Length: 250
Image (cartoon, rainbow, N blue to C red; front, side):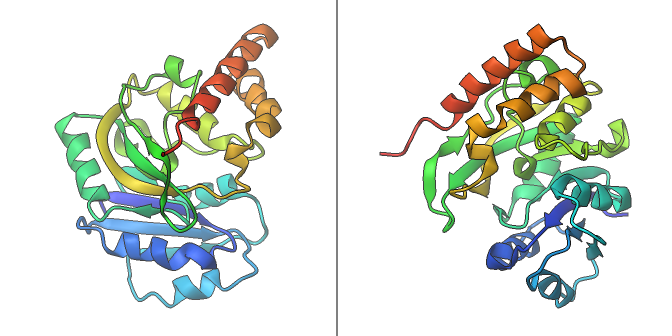
């Protein structure tokens, strides 16, 4: 079994897919499997992956479009690695991402870890300052802001089991991390910039006002909080979300 399983959802991703592929193939750590689930793409994304001649890359094709959470869950069900990490089909890693993360996990005896990542435009030029992994993450502080990004995090599935994404929520990553941190006391920070995140102009994650209701449901429906408590954490999340993207490069 490989030591690391990389989980990737793919949907009409051909524009940036080659760069993502190269960032995985360039990894200095090579004991990995890459599980890609295509979410019923209409472009040539599947063809690009099928043309890769690497036995470590495993492609699954969904029978219908079910969203990124559904696609990730298909890959997760088939993952066999000790460590689980995620990479969307338009983001990229630094060549030593896996090596650094696995080494850090072992050194710190961590069940969950995350690193800095660069926040870039579509051409991977810096857009705002790097997101900093500068504090331990717990269930309670993750309620106020989601510090964990899929592309720069890793957890030990051998220790805590696999954590699946809720299908139907537009905030499925936050719900998944919260559920995982019910089982893990703390996620540890690696203060190195190890990945590049593409900030698309129309990205749903940037339109905070459009997803206030979805974030409220994270607390109300998925965490089972009261209306008052859910409203409190939604307000906190909104303020932190604004601050997260407020410091522009000069």
